[in-house]
Amino acid sequence: MISVILLGAGNVASHLYKGFSASKNVTVSQWYNRSLDSIISFKNETEVTDDLSQLKEADIYILAVSDDAISNLSNLLPFEDRFIVHTSGTGSMYDLQKKNKRGVFYPLQSFSKGAKIEFQKVPFCIEVEDKSKMQMLKNLATALGSQFFKVTTEQRKTLHVAAVFINNFTNQMYRIAHEISDKENIEFDLLKPLIMETANKVQEMSPYIAQTGPAKRNDKKTLKKHLKLIDDEDHQEIYKLITKSIQKTHGIKYRFDIKRKKTNG
Amino acid sequence: MISVILLGAGNVASHLYKGFSASKNVTVSQWYNRSLDSIISFKNETEVTDDLSQLKEADIYILAVSDDAISNLSNLLPFEDRFIVHTSGTGSMYDLQKKNKRGVFYPLQSFSKGAKIEFQKVPFCIEVEDKSKMQMLKNLATALGSQFFKVTTEQRKTLHVAAVFINNFTNQMYRIAHEISDKENIEFDLLKPLIMETANKVQEMSPYIAQTGPAKRNDKKTLKKHLKLIDDEDHQEIYKLITKSIQKTHGIKYRFDIKRKKTNG
Image (cartoon, rainbow over all chains, first blue to last red; front, side):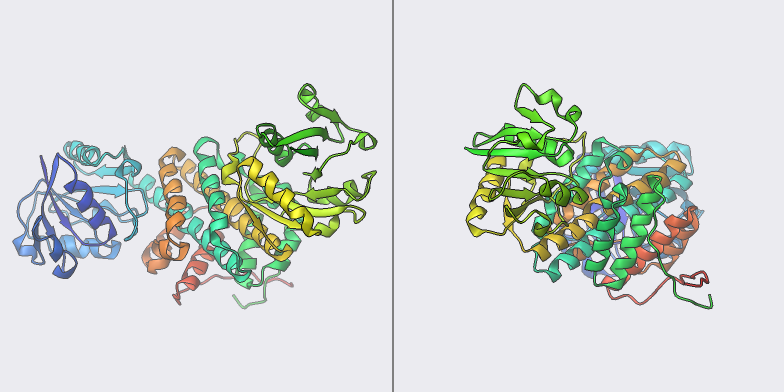
């Protein structure tokens, strides 16, 4: 049985708490947050605290806090030679206080408050300073039903950037489509099958092969019609830039005539 | 039984052919293409022709050809007062020759050569000039197992723009993530669960609510780190622009200092 102490109460911490609680091989023996409010409701399930001096001994301390808070929080930990990890995609392992053994346990997935997480679909990217600790991170991931991948710091940081494109930026494409369709009183529901199909397609073929549409076909008439139809200037700019990007990927030379404003920059 | 004559042999035509062939209530009585090569292999299943003067009578003629070809092809049709439709998202119904009864049968989905299509997941946007023809388009969609939506021309054109954001632009986000991860020898497979989760999430919550990440959190440190990590200038520009867009959506005032080059434009 691995004993875990969780620190933090954001989305990642909350989902990890649920995941570990459902696992046979892990126990969350204590949950710390600087404010008790967010975790007090779990007081009958685990020990909750807002006092770092009350932290018990455990196999691993998981700092599931915002990137900015990692370094500060780890400096306040009143112990040494224990195993501490953070869950950040971009933070360095060395942001953690060096009196302890350090590692990273980064779930490559998007956690939202309302949404359920199936940990089978969450790959964990793991990193350790002391190799003897690697197995524990593997066991933790396995206990959640997750896959794990040993990565370098550079790979993890790169994955985080890639994840921003795949998750945040893709979601913004959905949002813009939502805004555009709203203006014509079109139900967003109509577009949901296309969202699923777009995601499904690249499970089996590369995004390069999967690409279709007016940019890839270099269908200039449609490209121009679309630009005329889009009212919002920011959306126009995005339309032009992503079209340009698709055309570069597919070796097409046509470019919109993107006029730039004169600036002193 | 609705008799259909298909014109064209691209992705949409081919998938429609398969869909109709599998349906009990529709028969494709003839398939026209200007070159027989692409359809000759179906000659034992249906009549194939490259000669417009040989077109038979049918309940409906579906012009599943590129936008640019619709008007020309329809002008060459050697009959009148019959029901002709195109399958384009952007083309006007009035691109069709006016001697015939006109309509639009636009599948709001992405069709690729290699990928299978489940027509239950393809909403058809339908439009007719003569209301008495509406029922036939509804029946055609139903025969495929598809949903149908009566739309105005303006709505259909807007949907096509929205579909470009949701399909082509999203796919390009995947592609960029692929390029970025390739550089660090990271398997793209690692990112596939995130692609699915991102798509799944907005089936039940709005993209606005589903948004997470450094842009929305206005996590300036991470935004700057990411920009440093991205080598490709085009990818940097996209990172900045979509971040700006997310921040505008979520009412955040921080903006990257996007320097523009001096131009004469």
